[in-house]
Length: 197
Image 1 (cartoon, rainbow, N blue to C red):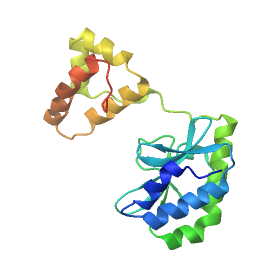
Image 2 (image 1 turned 180 degrees about the vertical axis):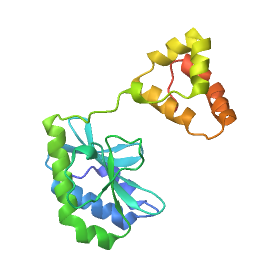
Image 3 (image 1 turned 30 degrees about the vertical axis):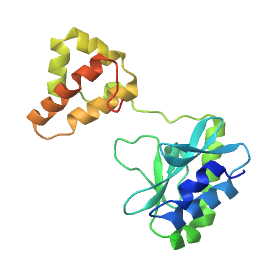
């Protein structure tokens, strides 16, 4: 697969984890076939097959990572994949803290990447938890019961947008904080917009 020259600057200008990102890029490019594309998505190098995301390189303060979009479907005999939070269903991260670690694990990283490409080509999908299984915070349920227009607008949102709201509204421990969040986002829900729109 040819290098996408548009991403060269991204790799060259990386403030932190530059060497690690360049190593991961090299491993990915040597592991995958010519049908896979190197693109920039969400500000990061992303590798896609027929427009479908396979793996993304991204960095955090304490580590550099590969994000496998369907990581939950990958065989992980070496226990290298991490589920970021309990709410992440499909994606899994492979985290690195040094270039030496990446070099040592290069053959394994390559095999996981090849497996991820094959999973995508097979068309297998991660079975996601239905939105109905996410609890609706009591304060939000009360608002939905009181306002049919709000209820209809919320139910018209995509499952992903509904899930994001439910998780965000349920996160605070104090009821007054949950109510404040709900009140703030009611106009956005009524406009058919998601939490991050």
